[in-house]
Image 1 (cartoon, rainbow, N blue to C red):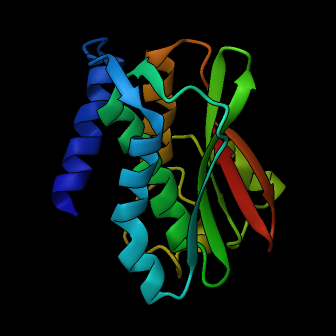
Image 2: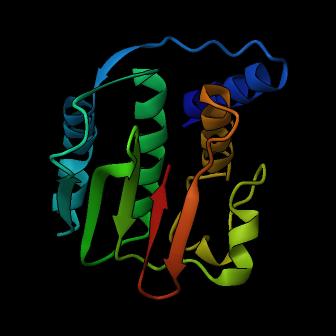
Length: 173
């Protein structure tokens, strides 16, 4: 936990100091999503949560991006979904967004997010107070770092949040 906190703070500092470096290369989206899914299969099976992939077969297999940063973002999003889902499912997926773009997403049937809390999600230490009993380890840096990493990949990138309190949440980018 301490190492993760230190690494998160270092990432945030590098981004703020404009010293953040991307490692762009060809990335196989299918393999990337399978790799992230494999990281969470054990935790989800222990909680009896269905973990699925939903990949549009028409998306390009290969894209140019920073594989490690995409994995970092997806691990954060799937990790949050796993923490806040006690029953139901989590879906990791990819779909065509525009003719030449794809959207990655993580969808869950977890606790959902109240409308008034959405604006705090991406602020530094933006942990929601009412989730304290569910998420005892997080400190509220993960989504902030994900947001900044996406902006480093492309200035117009953002994370979209669609949530219904009590029914679940979808994060997409």
